[in-house]
Image (tube, rainbow, N blue to C red; front, side, top):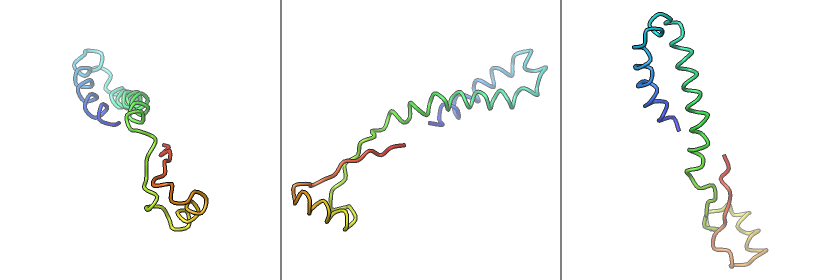
Length: 88
């Protein structure tokens, strides 16, 4: 998620600092870096969240004893695993 900002931002800033107007206005370097880093994060957070599956499978034997007993009472031994949404 943070890799594009960490890898591309120094390359972009190095090229921008060679421009004549950036050499004159050195006060803008820090705000420009913060803005570019924010833009990278705005676009990369949804992409990074979309890369990983949100649905997860867990064997019923890994559950807490009370929850496992409640599932066995309602459904018997028919439930070998449970599925849940990881969320963000």
